[in-house]
Length: 78
Image 1: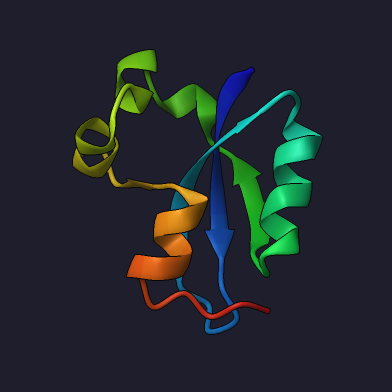
Image 2: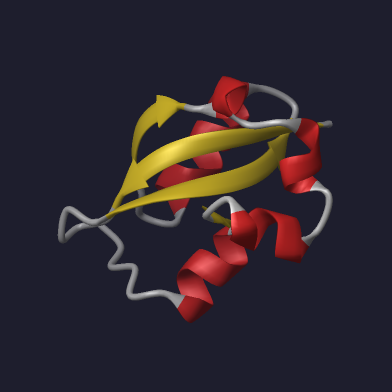
């Protein structure tokens, strides 16, 4: 399973970059759309493998997980 990074928008137009493990990009898009994200683009190539190694590394480069996006942000689902 790979990690993908998606630029997403919520219902208010705020943007976030979300790191999602998945088998394919389309699987990741489905997961994000299921929680109410508008997926803007695949930004995976803009990040290094070290950026995904732990929560602190992800925080340093501004990445959210699905769970932190839902529980620790002002995310508003579509």
